[in-house]
Length: 94
Image (spheres, helix red, strand yellow):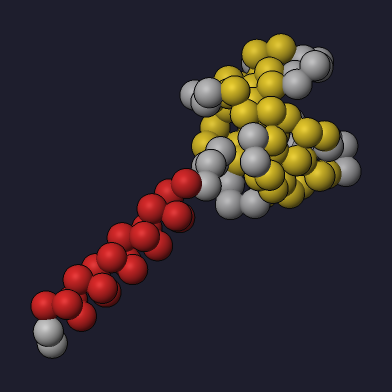
């Protein structure tokens, strides 16, 4: 394999990794800091969320927003640093 071919392959792989890293990851555990159920834990997995109280559903990240869809909890949260906020709720990442 020629050096030029190896460099092209390396450049393609590096570009792919950088583009994948640009997406915002919100996966993790959060504590409800303000809202109707302060102190409750929220876990965001891969496209699914669950509160320790039992509420659950799916979510998607769209730009700087996280859109939650569930039977008992739904709405849009804004990504603010490592936390998620809107006018009713504040989820602080643990």
